[in-house]
Image 1 (cartoon, rainbow, N blue to C red):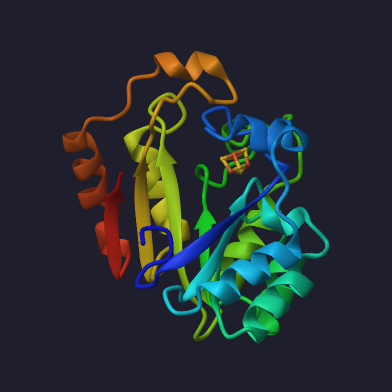
Image 2 (image 1 turned 180 degrees about the vertical axis):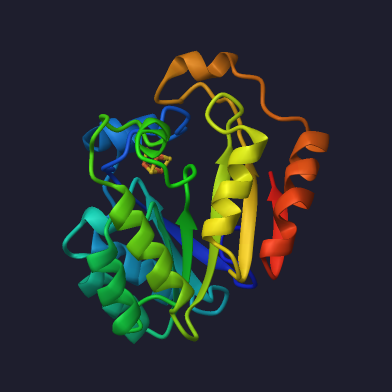
Amino acid sequence: MLDYPGKIAAIAWAGGCNFRCPWCYNRDLVLNPEVLPVVREDEILAHLESRRKWLDGLVITGGEPTIHAKLPDFLKKVKELGFSTKLDTNCSTPGVLEELLKKRLVDYVAADIKAPLIDGGYQKAAGLKNGTDVLSAVEKSIELILNSGDVDYEFRTTAVPTVLGKEDFLLIARKLKGAKRYYIQQFNPAKSLLDESYLNVAPYSSGELEEIRRSVSGYFETCKVRG
Ligand code: SF4
């Protein structure tokens, strides 16, 4: 009831990711997906079918779902069953995103923006090597989402104090100016973080998050703190 705004949805986690955000709390899913139980596509479709009375849709999250070549075919099958689909993505694969949007295989996109789009800074926030070409992909994904017509969407950023200063949110907001929804997500130090040193990072207080929200809310139709 939380993951797909306005809908009751099942959630499927796709293993593996092309980012290594140090504060990511899905360590096994990102680094060792093979140790986790696999749920086959036909099992997911049967699960949806059997709960048709209660479920409106399916959220596909990760990891990064768009690195899997079968994603468009899978989402097509979910849509053919009559369910709405929500995709969580790190915006690194605009080619896949464009296909999903064009073919209307997603009804809602939740797009992570890790940091201001500045060379060096973005790679650091995403745990990538310096020089990795990621900015153009994120930029293109933002453009696609902002122009996605009647496909619904949100942008969101996890507020990790050692990664993002308060002024960084202004830079992000300027890039996303005019977007429908922007969520500032609380950072939750958990034992399963990719980089355990982040366990020692104290999250922003709720007052600080509210201050950040106020500073950027004018750029969006809706801007909220989450978590
Ligand atoms: S938080 Fe980063 S590393 Fe974790 S799944 Fe999302 S993009 Fe991948």
